[in-house]
Length: 239
Image (cartoon, rainbow, N blue to C red; front, side):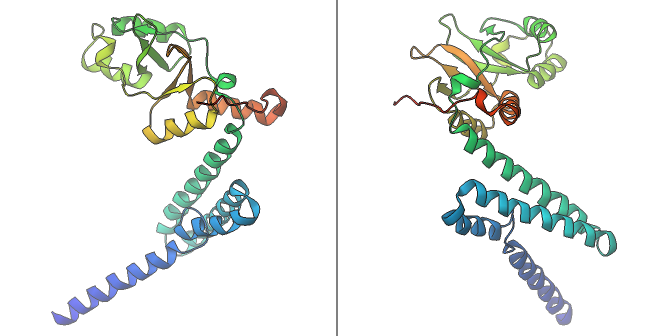
């Protein structure tokens, strides 16, 4: 019995040592990759440093995947996780860097269908079918944003409660609001921090004038990569 306990403790210690050493590998998404990025950023800048650390992480993922084919299939799953995490980090950093030079007013959606706070799901369904929107802002009589009704939430509520359900009972509240003359990276950061489907854009009076969604940020990035001059440098208003 004592030998069994010793063997178990030895295995646990070995696993912990392996995890510590694995986490120190200088490639994303491991902590070693973040340390490497911090060191590289001193000379190359944050964006370039992130790209290098992410590329190392993706290269490591290919190595794990190759080894997994011959030795341990578990390495293939680790490879997939490492590759996707490194790619996501690189993409998010690229978006933050580019969006820091673009005003929200240049990238926001300005033509959209909104729902009144007294609307029911049958009105939302009609709007969903006649538009390409996935997120519908819900506003009050003064034009202020109360929440956002996302397509997935709408479909779920249709199954559970039906067409007569008030939109205000299904909408997501706590939607961040950003001023239209701020930089786009602020909206992107708020969207990531709170994990919401959209960010509301308001004017000086606090009225809703636009939406920022992950979809339209992706479209903006795609257009900018083809036509860089389409989006100029932002002049951010103070306050």
